[in-house]
Length: 390
Image (cartoon, rainbow, N blue to C red; front, top):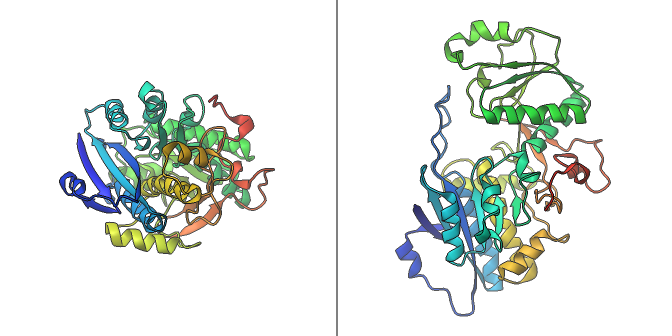
């Protein structure tokens, strides 16, 4: 297990960290960041290698931001970052963190793992943030009272895209799905969104792994995309096996959206409104790269803790957890509106960006999609729809 300790946003070795003693009148909030090494399957494009510090860089900046405010309130934030090896056990890592006295843990883990960790007996008194998984199941059947989500789920992403396509009146969709399980989950969210917002998946096709899109896309993609009349092609290819090769190669001249083309996301490098340019520049100066959606989800989780500490003027983990879950909590996250956590499933309400490679196209919720509580609840699983029984 690889462990790195950070304080004030500056990376330090464990030995150096242990020598740094806080003054006696400073109260410390301890936050743990738990992630795991993953073996990335080979993708067709190697243009964007995942940064080695993705997620962790967001945590580092958030701790620095918390400490900037905290020093005026005699509060200090310390982060312990734990990276579990590929063959390691995240459950044991969480048990170790709990045994070491941690009560606030940010989970940057994929799939259903955060839900399983939240159900551990050792996690009963922990406040956990899911900043890595978009699985809808974590906000439904696998939800837990001690698990909050700063990463948007697939339902929110698909709904954000569907609203924009409804505004454009592109209501007939050709859906192309990869063969991986996560692609099928994304496709399921797309089909759900189509029903919610008056669109129709006129045809669904599966892109099999026996195609080599790099060599044959020019010949195969036009033939593959022939079929029933459609306004837009929706791609479900989360890892990037083939989706980039759909653009500009369809039989009919049609826009491409979904996991490639016009992409719904919680963060994007082209987003500069509402003070986001300032966050982008600070992150780039610290990490020497652009901020990713994963970085922002981790940053939002740790900033939520800092915001709660500021508002309550407390460093007690139980008090912070109560405030974060409560009706008065809001978080400013450079997205134009205050963000808050849904009481029924722990999901962070937030606008979803719709972006192309180098431009921000739109932001959902779109104008005209109304809700009695907040338009943000038009994205994802609303309270009457939730399968969460916490």
